[in-house]
Amino acid sequence: MSTKKFYSVARGVRIGIFTKWSRCEQSVHRFKHTVFKGFTSMDQAVNFLLAGSKFSSCNQIPVFDETDNPKTPEHVGHKCNGVHCTKDSIDDLEGDDSDNNCVLHEQLSYNEEETNPKTLMIDEQNEQTNSQIEDHKCERGKQLNELSKKQDKIDSKCESDRPYFGSKIENIVKNQHQNIDQKISNLSKENATLKAKLENEKILCLLTRKIDNITQTQNSLTDALDKISDKTKEMTDTLKNTCEAMLIYAKSNETKRAMKITITCHTRITQEALEKHQAD
Image 1 (spheres, rainbow, N blue to C red):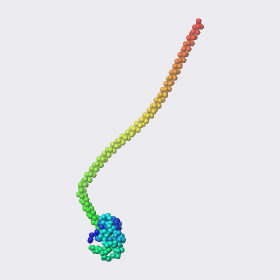
Image 2 (tube, rainbow, N blue to C red; image 1 turned 120 degrees about the vertical axis):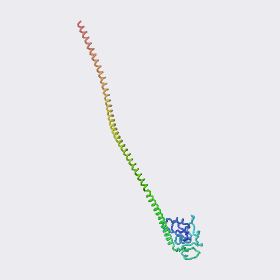
Image 3 (tube, one colour; image 1 turned 60 degrees about the horizontal axis):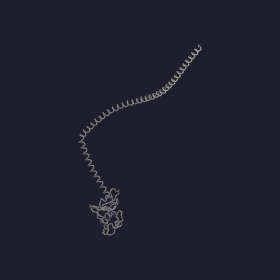
Image 4 (tube, rainbow, N blue to C red; image 1 turned 30 degrees about the vertical axis):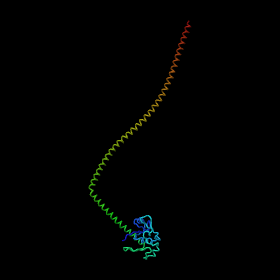
């Protein structure tokens, strides 16, 4: 089959004719319900788009090449001879072999049958879908074969390494058991230590409570002693005042006694003198 050089996109991201498949693929890739077909000549590509009623004249069809500026079909080899072809002119010229207008249906090589644009688009889509399905099946088959080989290698490796890893795992489990037993022993010792500390803390708490009670009792006794001291001071002051009063009273009694003695003596002397005077 001859190589396709022009790709007409009737439904896609960008509508027009592409001279490079890479540019065409960007317009139709992952676009829902895309419509496109490849051709060996520019005239076939133009006729495909005009027959689909996407454009009313060939000069309206953009042609995208490797540059960013779109061109018209005339710049890329389309033959209009100065008269722009339209959909109506294509319908009128269908079956005409004249070279003065657009070549509507070039002879397709390798027994390709001429069909209407919609049929061509559907066939192209089906062909592309089937090709993609076959490619996907082939790719999936290769992936499954590779995965099966990898699985076989892994199984073989597991079987060969099973004794080594079995002994390795046994040693690891044994070491783990020993470590766990050691940890349990350490935890038991720590538990005993904590219990002893707890008992000591309980005793210390009891002693602290007793000390608090003794301190409270001591404070109460101190307060009582302070009260007794104050009372003793009051009693001492009262006794002192009483003693002073008694001393004063005693002094007063001695003075009275002395006066009484003096009066008594004076009276006796006077009486003796009077008696002597009478005697004389």
